[in-house]
Image (tube, rainbow, N blue to C red; front, top):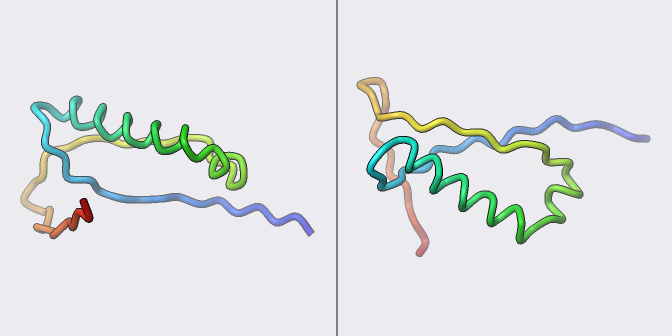
Length: 70
């Protein structure tokens, strides 16, 4: 039996950048590099798009601790 699964990966990256556009470009470059090095993910899971939008935190954004394993 063939079953289709529609999936979404959601995340928030905290990036040091001069502008929101620079932050978007940094994330886009990292994700494009990752997807290029792991083509089996796109092939096996049917990944078609990666989308994101940079924004400056507002009063409704809670301070979250984002751990970096580097």
